[in-house]
Structure formats: C-alpha cells, structure tokens
Image (cartoon, rainbow, N blue to C red):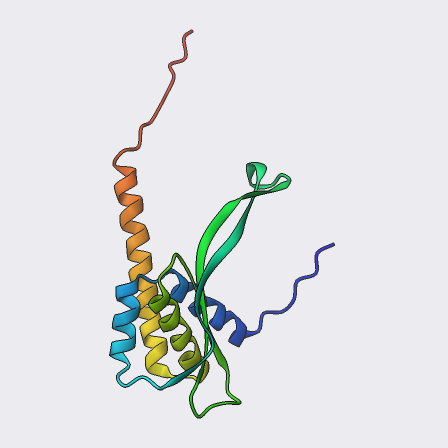
Length: 153
C-alpha cells in the first residue's frame, strides 16, 4: 500500500524553481540576475565545487536498478550577507560551470525570501525552456519515419 503525503505548496514552488535553475543555460541565468538589479552580497557556505554524481537506471524503465555511470555536477551553497539566520541558497548544475552554480544558488536564496521580481524571472526561464524543448521536438519530428506493413489476403 502506498501512502502519499500531502504536498506543501511552498515546497512544491521551491522544487519548481530549483528544477528551472538547474536546467537554465548560463546566459539565461546571467540575464535573470542582471534583470534583478543590484545583487546582494553572499557568504559562501560551500564555494562552487565540481564532483561526480552516480547515475542509476532501470531495465525497461521498471526493472531492477543498475549503476549506469557518472556525471559531472557542480554545486554551491550561499547565504546572503546580513541574513545569517535566513535560508541558504543551493545551486546544483550539470557540468563544470562554477559561475552558473553560484548564480543558481544566489537566485535560490533570493527566491526563498519571496522576491516577486525573481519569481517573474523564473517564469521567463521556464517559458524559454519549454520553447527550447518544443523546438527540439519539432526538429526531431522532421526526421520521423513511419513504417507500415501491408496485409495480404
């Protein structure tokens, strides 16, 4: 029997923006930070560092799990200066881009404080990601091949 926990709206919102920040392109994150104006000073709890994360897969999507390989991940944890008891911002991104991880962590910290302008930037980033996925799907659809068989009677 599976028991589902009720979703906390604040937790669901943070999950959404963390996903958007992790998938955002470096230039997009830089534009989002620039659009917010003067950025607050940060104290590094954990400076940007690159490491490996284990990727796991399942046979057929449902079968037994297996270790698929490793991926390079960069992470960063910051706290806004002057807000030592406030929330920490986390940034996890695929690859070795330390600036991107730092910007993601900074935006996470700002978003946790309820900054409406930052929420609008997340909406813009998410719209850009959706458009990018749709464009990739449309491009892939141009090479689609339909196979069919004729039934002989």
